Amino acid sequence: MSASGSLRLPRTEQSARVRRLSESEARALETSPAAAPLSVLLTEGTARAHEQAERALFLQSLFTDSWEGVYGQFVQAQHYVNYLRQLHTLYAAFEGVLPRVARTALTPMLLMPELRRAEALEEDLGYFCGEPRGEGFVCVETRLHAERLREVAEDAPHLLVAHAYARCVLDVFCAPARARVVARAFDLDGDQGTRFHAAFTDAEMTEFRVRLHSRIDGLELEEDEAREIVQEARMAFRLHALVCDELARGATGIAASGPGYRVGFSVSQ
Image 1: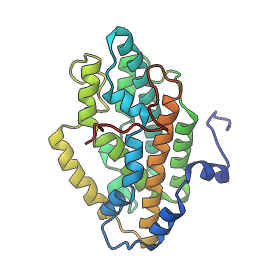
Image 2: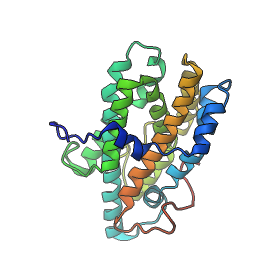
Image 3: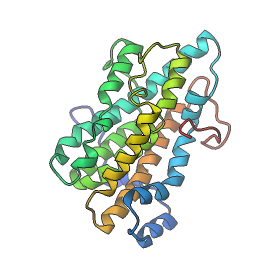
């Protein structure tokens, strides 16, 4: 642990925990042509990892299960706040490294204002907790994920595109549906407590998807850089699944119905 209190792992150990591509996936990345637009390569190349992340038991329980009664609502709120704290740690880390890519070829995509969500998360945490930056649980997997963001920003900034893409798919694309779930679950008025998820209407989301893909496809990248971005995006999805698995472990009201993931409705569908 560093003097600032942040968790720091040797790069070799960090890689062993987060780089879990199978041999077949690695070979596919090496042989796949980069002729297709990067947005298409990302969509197709991360489909399995994306699906597994969305089917994480914690997310399924939090956003699709029914939590009955006052106590159930209280427990659900605790889990939701824990989830927001993990997201705030990740978005704060992402925004913290953005100055390193300012005025570079990556700027058109990475500096899109829609990717800056830390302030909205602070407002939601302030609504639920009263103190947005108070002490809260941040799991080891979240710290590893944040450390990975800082690592690639220093060593391979183009890989930040992968993490930005994963956050859009996991958080932004499903935001309107989740905002409705949260508002209904906690009887919220207006955008109180839903600033993070209520940033877009369904119509605005369609326009944002088009603009995001255009920005991704407009990046000037070598073929090997495009392959590396797809591989890093897979890692980002898997890191998110690990965070959710840790949040589900021993959590009140969340019980596994299978080995790690629950198959069911996804609010982003």
